Length: 244
Image (cartoon, rainbow, N blue to C red; front, top):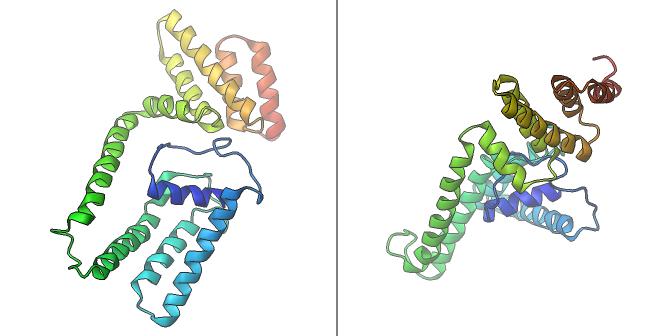
């Protein structure tokens, strides 16, 4: 429920942008958390508004926008269907259609109250708000594109934003491990494998039940010829999945 609130926040303020929101980027919380309660109130409120407007007019565009948003975001909420991700900005792609429709309808309604044509062209009050927002948000997205140059770049960038993200630490560690296995320079190889082990150890420390991190950490220690440490993490992995 808290994450559903995070999605609304991202629609309004798309910053910071992170490729993966895994444990413990968003810590566990309870219903005593005001942010959880605010999220509940928001979703209940728009659901009620949508139902009331739909009952009055089956073709109400506001109801359509609300229902489109709620139905599509429900698919990725982990409330009705379990998916293999805690949270992802990519999951807002479809729900954002409903959100954008509602924003456009509200702008149109505001213009109508002002006694002005709903066509945005020549409306200085609207453009005074839309232009800066579009420029700032476009700059954020364009700047973000560079982070997706390759896997290593996105992992290094996002692990700084979410240092307590177990999965992100594992991804960077595994990527460094893969680089080390292909490196021919002994000094560089040792540096890469040491960094890989550091990040994967942090991943396991954040989430001790993380099977893949424990498995590849054992493999990294084996590659480093530290067989005692490799055995420790291999045994951890076997406890998590005895049949592997």
